[in-house]
Image (cartoon, rainbow, N blue to C red; front, top):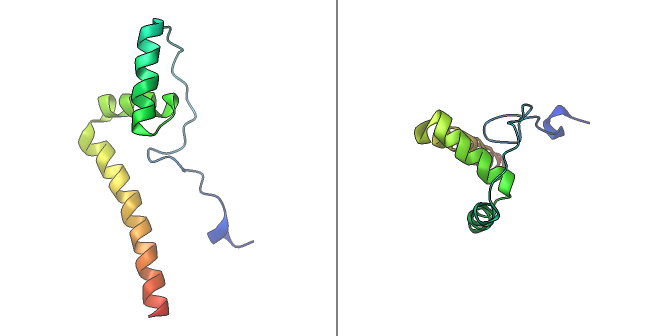
Amino acid sequence: MSSSFSRNTESLPMGKCTSALPGVKVPDETFDEVSRAARIAGMSVSEWIRTLVMLRVHGLDHVTSIHRQRLEAVRGMDQERIDEHG
């Protein structure tokens, strides 16, 4: 199989997630609100919390830049396909 079809090991915008933060106990009401916020954002609770932590630690500009780079890479791939097929 061609390496161009192999799975990317960095499928998350911030890279491969290999380290875990400690579990946190919260009141049921807080958990319900976090679950609701994640659902509204179209994310799992884990993804929502991960994004929240990344924003707090790295800042909006950096996190936005990472997402923009991924989008630009995808857009570039589409442009290459258009150029190939005219």
